[in-house]
Amino acid sequence: MAHRPPHRLPTGRRTFLRYTAGVAAVLPLAALAGCSGNSRDPNLIRIAFQQFGSGTIKEEWISAAAEEFSAENPDLVVELVPIVAAENDYFTKNELLMSSPRTSPDLVYEDSFILLSDVGAGYLQPITDLVEGLENWDDIADASKDAVTGEDGEIYGVPITTDTRALWFHREVFAEAGLPEDWQPGSWDDILEAARAIRDSDSEAIPFFMFAGTPQGEKASMQGFEMFMYGTGDGTGLYDGEAEKWVLGSQGFVDSLAFLKTLFDEDLTGSLGQHLDPNISETIYSSLLPDGKLGMLIDGSWISQNWTETAPTPWPEWSDVIGLADMPTQDGGGTGTVTLAGGWGLSIPKHVTDREVAFGFLQKLVSTETLVKYAIADNHITVRADVAEREEYASYSPAVEYFTDLLESAYYRPALPAYPEVSSALQEAMEAVMTGSTPEAAAAAYDATVTDIVGPENVQEATA
Image (cartoon, rainbow, N blue to C red):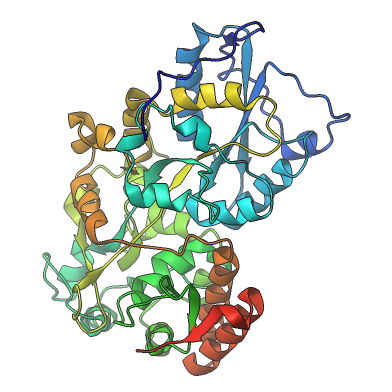
C-alpha cells in the first residue's frame, strides 16, 4: 500500500495528551461494567490488555508510548485497563467490555486466533483506511497481515508480535539419563525413547510435558495438539484452504491423540491434576524447569522472559542449562520439523469514542523504537522487518535468532471466525483421552462437534 504522511489528529478540538498512564485510574472490570449513562469523555483513550499476575511489561510499553505522545497532545488522558486473567478468561472479559458503548475500550490487545471471531461478533471495526497511512505497514510480514484480514477483505488490526514453538530440554536431566546435550529428535519415537530413558533413570524429573486439556485453553491446542497434528503428513491440517472446508476423519488427528495417550499410559508425563491445573505453566517456569524437575517441554519462544534479571524468579544460567530442539514430524518425513506461529496486535473496537484519536495513539505504540524496546522486554519475536534489523533486537536473547529462523517454515492456525470453537473441541478431545477415552472415540466426538459448529456443508473427510 502507498504511504501517506504520518496520521495527524484532527484540529479544532482538544487534541493534547496529558501523560497519566503511570498514575491513571486503573479501573476494575466491575467498576467499568457499572458505569452509568452512555456518555464518554471524548478526551479519554482507554486501552485494554492482558496482564499476567503482577507483570508490568505491557503496562511499561503503553506508558512509554503515552509519555512520548504527551508533548504533542497534553490534554488527552490514557487510561490503562489491565485484565488480570487466564487466557480464556481474558478473551471473555475483553469481549464483555467491548460489548457496550459505556464500557468499551478505545484500543484492545488481541490475539490473532480470536480476532476474526470478535469481528464476526461485531466487537471490532475495520481500520483499512487508517493502516494505509501507517509508516511501517509494509514492514509487517504478509502472514501476519493475513491473520488480521477478515473474510470481507477489510483489515481489523495492526500486528505487533509473533512466536514460534520448539522443544525445550534440561541438559542436566538428559545427562543423568545418558542422553546427549545436543539432542535433536528425528521423529515422535525419538521423543518417546528420550522420555522413557528419563523415566527409567535415577532422575525424579517429569520426563515430558505438553499442555493438554480444556483448562490450558489455546496453549493446549497450539503448543500441544497442533505441534503434532501438523507434522503427520496429512497436508491439509485442520482446514483445507483450497476447498474452504474443515477436515474430519484424519488419521493424523487420531495419531496425535494416541501420542498423548502413550504419555499417560507409560508414565512419561505429569499427573492428570498437573495437566488440568490452569496455573501449571507458572509452576513449570518458576520451579520445575529451573530445579531440574522436568526433562522436556513443548513451548513457545517467549518463555525465557520468566528468567530475566527483573523477573520474579531470575535464572541467569538458563541458556547454559536448557537446550532447544526442533519439533520433528511424526516419522521425520516431509519438511522434517514443524512449528506453529501466532501473534498479537492492536485493534479498535466498534464502540470507540474517536477512532482517529485512538489510531493516533496506536501509531505511537507501534513506532520502531517503541517496539524494539517492547520486544526485548517481552521476549517476543517481532513481525516487523524494521524492528528485526536492529542490532539490539537481534542480540537481546540467546534464543531470539533460533526462534526467528523457525518462522520461515511455520504453520499458522486457520484465521477464521469458527477457529476458537474448533480449538475448544480440540482441547476437549485431548482431555477425553487423558481421562480414559480411546483416541478413535475422542476423534469421532471432535468430528461431530466441529460439524455442529460449522455446519455439514463446511466439512470434508481427510483424503490422506
